[in-house]
Amino acid sequence: MKDYIIRTQNLGFTYDDGDENSSSEIPALSGVDINIERGEYVAILGHNGSGKSTLAKLLNLILTPTVGKIYIDGKDITSDDFTEDDVFEMRSKIGMVFQNPDNQLVATIVEEDVAFGPENLGLPREEIRRRVDSSLELVGMSDYARHAPHKLSGGQKQRVAIAGIIAMKPRVIIFDESTAMLDPQGRHEVVDIMERLNKDEGITVINITHYMEEAARADRVIVINDGKIALDGTPREVFANVDKLRSMGLEAPQGNELILELKHAGLNIKGESLTESECIETLFKFLS
Image (cartoon, rainbow, N blue to C red):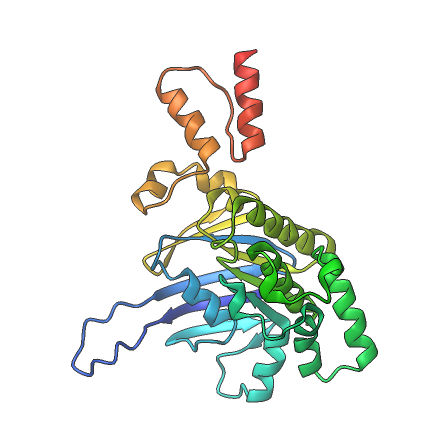
């Protein structure tokens, strides 16, 4: 029997536009059924306004569903019996890293910022110290423990924000377009951290992104379009639907697009290319 850390059933959410006379509201999400296994690494794709960030906020209890059910670690968080204490407990199980790290940094010293979450859990000082040190080491920011966060680069700030979440020891971390404001080097560093958290720490990782190359590195890709699940499968299964992705305003990874265009141009190239390295290897084999 599969061990699901997150399940949703007929999940739906509609934003209130504040117009009492409006009767044409379009749901941000509708009929969403998702099962995510403990320890999975899942990427969620979708065009702007597709509903992917709304889903993240529902899973992290920032928003309450208009309809449907959400189960986190076997507990129905949409139940009428779900209390404020339950909310606090669940938020310690599911961490969230936002697009702009400045919105998550609360202290004037890096190590104090990372300690903020564990302190709110009421942990002993020795445990807080241990968590801060191990979290900063995990994201490669130990040398910056006494630095001021506002003097760091965007990628460094995001790593500090991630360390603050790691220090809470969550079972799930949701990255809500956490690389969108970073340069290519910063994006690469953050995605590497995601993979290490998943593979080495066993944390369930959900990466909500619009970068196809990031999604290609996940174990599973879910595509949301106009508030509904449009595709769900391995990266190779999902990115094989090039025409369907294009109809939703999305593209396959650039390496895959290049190989497909070369095939359409009449070149007899074998294989697929989801990553840059695979694309290079495919082209090298063809040219050899």
